[in-house]
Length: 480
Image 1: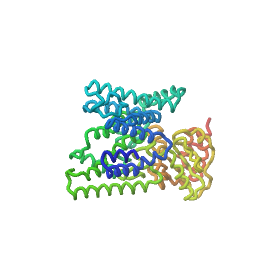
Image 2: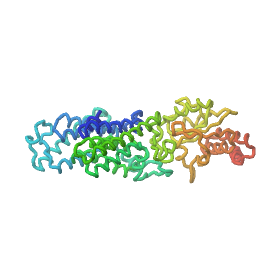
Image 3: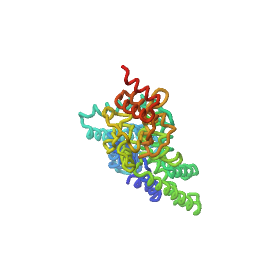
Image 4: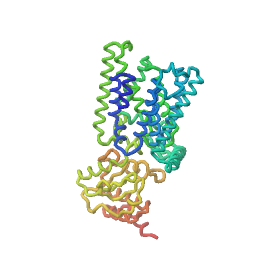
């Protein structure tokens, strides 16, 4: 609603429909709409704040200023990264001041600008500071209502933890590399590989048309591009490189900016012939159809979406991990796969605290990454003999868990992947594979899971009595 309403005022109804189509067909938006997290919430409230301020700057209106304060407060109450909007607001305020546009000395006034005073730069600056004070006061009241007086210390402690976390960094993965400090180009890379191809092409068209002169009024261009550029600049310095979700606040502004491709095509004197406008509309429709096909194909695993420029979601784990790929939803896909294959149980190395058993997956625990204390204590074993023995390893466990110079599962790299449930589990067939069972025994032993290590070593020796690794594990288990 907000995207279409603002878009209609900026680029007309057709341009607004294009912006809205880009939004609703974006798998990243759909994915985070389905998760009980704060990323899309803070995106909406940041967008609402800037929209309301744009309305207030266009025509002084107390409801617009109050709406901006409510949006700002809701953003602050939702997620600590909402503080990224502070430099956005400072820059937008500076642009408004430097533009020479009249600002009412009483921000709550509804009188025409010419009657409200503030013609001098000092007067306009004072009026802007007063408006900012009102904005901040309303925002603080919202935070106070959400957290209460007794909750404010915890709120500010959370903000401090977030700042400390961003300064210290977080283990992250990009293109086969793992880093605690991140990469300045991480979010730009994530944007390029996880944004639908049609959207990227339409955005490229919008930039090209802008450079060729199809520009909105300067005030509108500033209010659309400043949030995008500020958030990109911040994320280039951001050391917590764990998901495209941190970049979501730029998407609505980009989609609005892209609306000019259709909105501008309808304007008289836009510098294009009727044939040119028709061709442009055709390109846009093809791009939207491409987006629609991609959106339909990824259902219901939107979080694991990667565009066809990098080979689609099957190749996604080679580029990005963390919340770009899985938030526990793939356990349902694993259960459905197991049921379809008529397998009673599997070996499973999962990621995070979302135990696959919650979703009906019967599994023998294999070392992974995340909160595994309860899972690691279980003693369930895959029945022997089994018609098929399958090993399901989450992409995070496959690439991320380090053991010396390599990872726990380097030995799987050359083995064929027979299925990818939810695009974040990789399934291997280890039926009758003595070497695979010996490798599992080694993983268990090094993870201090002696019971599981002994069981797998015996299974390996049952398949190959001469297996050197399995014999060595049994000898070490028999030692002191």
